[in-house]
Image 1 (tube, rainbow, N blue to C red):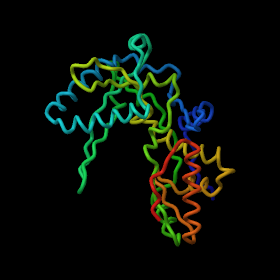
Image 2 (cartoon, rainbow, N blue to C red):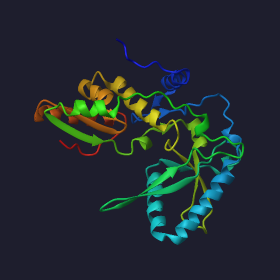
Image 3 (spheres, rainbow, N blue to C red):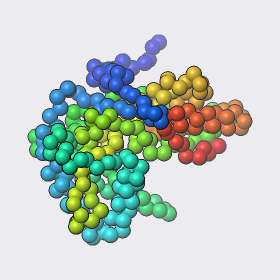
Length: 275
């Protein structure tokens, strides 16, 4: 009996947009378009810059009360800038091009040993016309199996290995013509002028689909040269985490090495494999 789920009309459209428009640059990294539901999105008409500015000023007030938070937050944003995941918008394009400004905020994770600060982009923030960027993006179909099935398969291996992809979402580039739909505002200090910045996909409704679809596409594009790793990409990943294994240590080491090499073809890096 065929149990494969049929895609909805919107899921099919999302797949078509990706497959017809994705590209790769000279480094092998994938460049994807935002999968809009319509050819004429209205979210850029919602005066989002003013809303994002008000939210950013509130964030700066929080920084004044929590200087350690500001230090950590600035480190994260500067990492984006240094890795060229964010670039400054030319001044002449700030008001002349249709764009969407996405507010951002701090999410603090307190662990037993360390406290980490994440920058979260709020693409669900509605503009003055009541429409957000996320309202107009396709979610795409679920492309990976469920976690329970993955864990059950993983436990069947004699030798297991685990790892995850470093900064997976941020390693997938957004097509230049769509970057203006993902602008943010930032300045290191209140006495500096505000900068309008472009950011790669993260925090949008379509980001999980775009990331996982890119893993699948990489397995198809490079699968002939990396057959074992290609199967692992298609079957043994849950979002950016890999849980796989083999019958013996030698095979597990070889498979994990091949997986790292395959991911590198797409500009992706895994953390050290744990066997």
